[in-house]
Image (cartoon, rainbow, N blue to C red; front, side, top):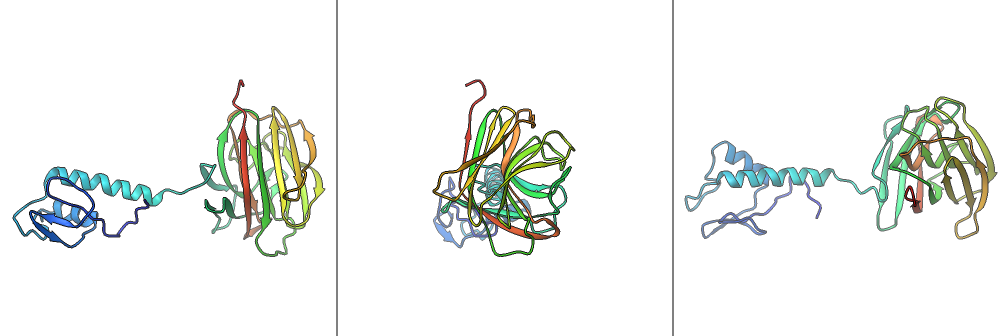
Length: 269
């Protein structure tokens, strides 16, 4: 159940708190939000629309504090699907965000940043930490057209969240360029192995030790390998997830990632 701060929450105050209207003795009253109840109790307004002389006890105050805390926590929680966190890497403009639609299984990510190239990256990242060998697969499509032919939507595995981190990714550009990018060590240059897939593309990045391979093609068709490269040494745990870069420092671009699947091989198995 999603709690929304400010919406009336119903309690039964006789000997316990259950769903219903306020009950003082045998008299029902109108609903009051838990924050209002707490404030009134703290201020000594124990009567609180009293009709039978019953005052709110300290245990009720404690209950309200717990319930308010739970409500705020629930209101701030966010479903990120198989990932756990999100945020900007490097310098990005305001407005970067990610939305996960559990009904569709889609991640709609809006990102900015000048580029993911050379020795510094700037993009928006939805991620989790993982260890060992792994593969990340997704269908990728852009929302709308753009003059930025090299806007980038990527499946990425990187060492950390520093802009110059070592990494490898499978990336779809706005103009159809599809590449396996990699930076072998922190703050070094970025290199790539390229192919071309126009329109919606299905991408996979595979990590086996220090070997990274990209697979690319159209959804529901056989994916063709690109690579591998063996110049990227990452220490566990790594950051794995979905990235969007607008390729223009002051603008935003949006991509949709669907049919996302992360497969992890437990270390030592």
